[in-house]
Image 1 (cartoon, rainbow, N blue to C red):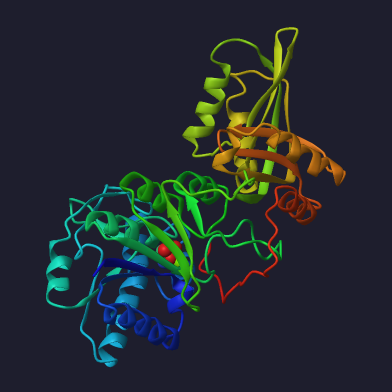
Image 2: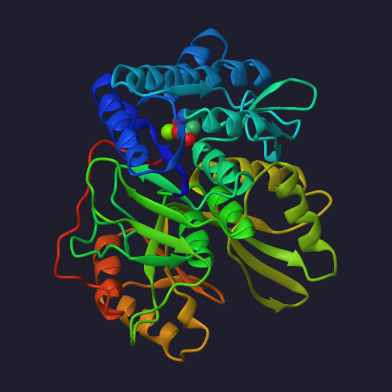
Length: 417
Ligand code: ASP
Ligand code: MG
């Protein structure tokens, strides 16, 4: 007998009919002799709809009230799912995040879980119940209701799995695993049997939105065995764990891309200590995430440098730079939009020479210019013009020997954000 956490995303419980199928799936697991704790997201587009409603009433709703509102989405799901299980003749009990003992830090809209006291859910399990916990929510020490950030139900599931020392945490979603790249772009993308936490973390941060990055961080920290699998089929999913074997001769595990990249250049900056600290400090104070930073050489005591931000932050970043021009003088700022960052990820990259050269060659063979490059031990990213992205991703997929002969399965509407 195992202790298993099963997490179902919003599209998996998007209709009452789907809810019924999920209920059956949970019961099947219990009938196999396991103890089951379930975490669910809000049904379908509920969270988005609630956000729209809030904005109709007040375009700047207080964060506290927003959390009060959004947590209702998951509360609906857990109650209905429990009813569906009862209807099929089994015992289940639903709990809000705070009833399940999930304590968070004192921040609204993207709180981190600080502690879990799982006594109550253990008792309910002992009594023979299927336990159902609302994802994405918790409560502060002061009794304030909080949410964990969009997509946060994954984190609830992993954190609960860690707290109760579950044998496995299964994330059921609308794709049947983690793929070598987006199967909608590359038809012969392959489903990975396993991937390491570090590789998954890179892919999650790079925009492969199947798993929430914070959930992967948690899983890594507490060594939780995670499985990503489809809620619509019985296909085996992808196991996320400490170390995953690489197929012989394969060094790259996956290819990710982020389409909303803008590059900002700041030209003619004084080449003196503290300048970058001031500039990037100001951007950070304004919550602007900066990605790749490149300094382009110094002439006559003046430096030029470029950095990337997400397109949606470009205008604000420009405003911030304008606002500090008097304390950090520079000649001018320029920008380019419609760029993409394409990245290859693989734990084997560190110890294999020639990986980068292969990427540059595959990209230049299609006549695409590489604008910026950044590397980490297990990742290599190139910023390029957004056209022809599909060709680039396909070429890289082939170059690194990732093409599979099976065509990927892509399921129903997306849980992925
Ligand atoms: N319902 C929340 C959202 O849509 C949390 C989740 O789905 O994980 O972001
Ligand atoms: Mg969701």
